[in-house]
Image 1 (cartoon, rainbow, N blue to C red):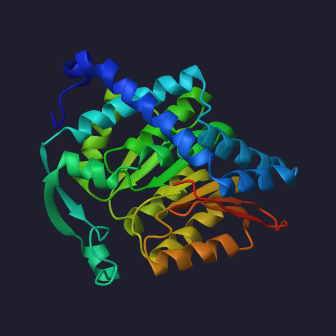
Image 2: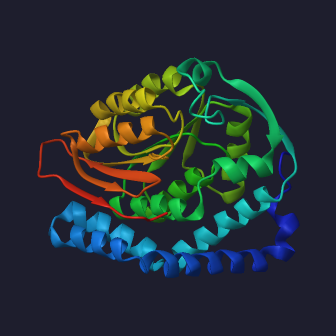
Image 3: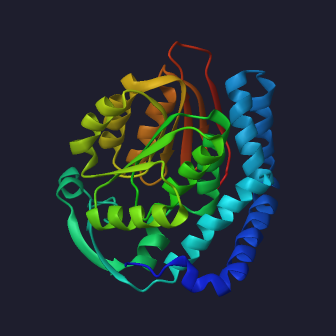
Length: 306
């Protein structure tokens, strides 16, 4: 087994959960104290629009650290797993499809062909798993918008997937389909979902451009998407175009690392300006779009969530 079972560290669990609570308190103090953050949230509320209100509810809850007891239980459980993964020196061999290369030398061919890298679980978790703040954003978005079908591009060890799946579990409805190019990571993620008791996740292995079309045809419709892989301008725009016919009315799309490179920033600007994007929230390192089926007056905000 790649990682020791959680019960082997049960004696340290209380300390780890306290760590998670301390981090949550720190996030609340740091983020909500920013004037631009408060202004952006009030801007959303001022539109008196159900969709903008819902997004404002999410951002307000994340910045103020407002979580129910049952939500905190899942947060602590997943962060306990993250803590364990960050302490693992187990070696793992993965195919890197370009995210690890500098933007100045990365090419589409690099990202398609990939290169085999041997590293530790600790390093994968440190560099590829979403940080807590971003995970909480995903968690609250799923809780608020209540999608039935979520799609994630980029599984890694499954931390972000687990947050989405846990939110669906609390919603008592929905399933996450997650795509991962590295078979070893997909296998590790599946093991982590099993340990967390999450049964509403389906993992697909392969390059996104090779498997996405068949997966979209299989699931038929999409309410929530998280794009966290293949950080390249034209690829990101191509995936957006591919997803659009399957997006339901008022669906939510989250793009990670929109400031990764100039190309990713251009891709975000293009998607935010698209006529199908009703609301866009530029959160500096990630972006949230609410997609509608008919043109509406656009709402755009920018705030430093991260």
